[in-house]
Length: 289
Image 1 (cartoon, rainbow, N blue to C red):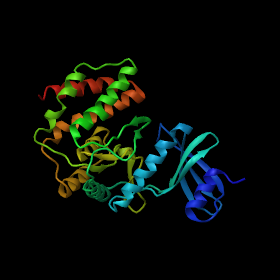
Image 2: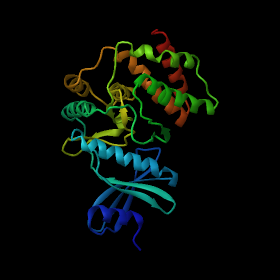
Image 3: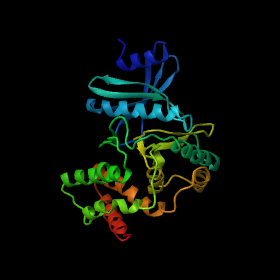
Image 4: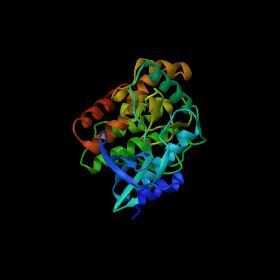
């Protein structure tokens, strides 16, 4: 009997597909990831989660296709998505990973900068999506400081409050958000949205690609800030980005503001020491008044 996953591959490729081998893959903590290989030798990347996760997989597929359409940085091709045996699934092109080197990092920085030059007339996105497993609202907005305050920081702070956690100075910080943009007006750039080192790689030929997006249109500094949070990007990456698309001098302060969103999200997802990191960032930002 043909499974929904096999049927999705066949619809996309135009030829039948019979899965003969599946292998679990590590590296993620939100979805169950595996590779599937057909009797024809074709190999694909498969993600599964609860059925309620299907809209998030659909949004991820849309983001990958939107990034690929820019003809800047590469992403895995979307093969299909749907539900099977009580689980949602997303099938992607399987890209064998190579080893990062200065050249691939430089190319990644240059291509990311070119992707960030792709703009829209509004902040937000066409649909809501998720970052990790956290719902991420993307209503269209004409004003970035308000969008970031209400739909990024305040959203995460509300989720933390539901877990019984509050942060000293959070309300004061929300009130002062416009001050960080008094002499800086970002354009609505196409963002990856979740760009840490684990979501960027290169293939066996050294060509960089990005995956697991949480895309929307926002300040490009938000993407660039997160690359610093867990490392994984070399000086060659930053030098190439800066050469292609120089960053505003106020980025060093706003980097903390943007990574606060991820610290709060990681607290809401995993708990632990991320609460103290977020509190430290709030304290630092309040001192920049």
